[in-house]
Length: 112
Image (cartoon, rainbow, N blue to C red; front, top):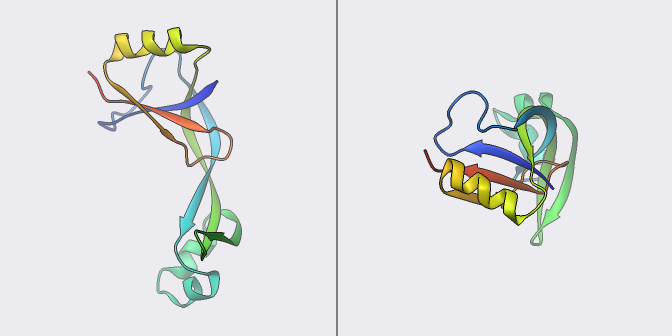
């Protein structure tokens, strides 16, 4: 399974051995409809950035969403044993939901 891999301390560069840099599509959400965004002083900038601006419903409320391309680090973990080896080598890890369209989860390295 592919995971985005980052470090909690925001260190620059490759977060771990075996990670490769890949362009992914981040789903960026705003908690208001597009017509309200247009009225904000920052609205023009928000609408110029990214692609595929649209509205969606989240928990009964209308949100706006856009897609932004970003370079992220990816790692392939084939099984639980590989995940445990990663934890042993780099310390504590956390698995979180991804904000990116192509990858379901993110591994955040919190150790050394």
